[in-house]
Length: 52
View (cartoon, rainbow, N blue to C red):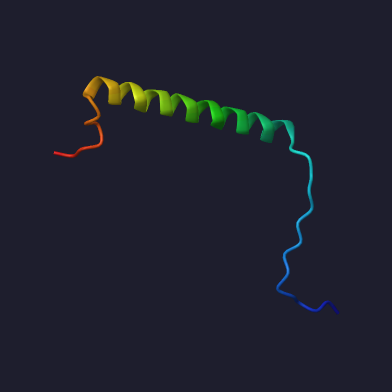
């Protein structure tokens, strides 16, 4: 009979190709969002975060 414990055991494994591609995609999307935010901020003079 196993005794329950409050321990969390993690084993390191290599990422699958799908996981690696998903991480690459999320990094690229994040970069696009940041560039878009900077573009909007430059066009509005930094007022893009204000709500009227």
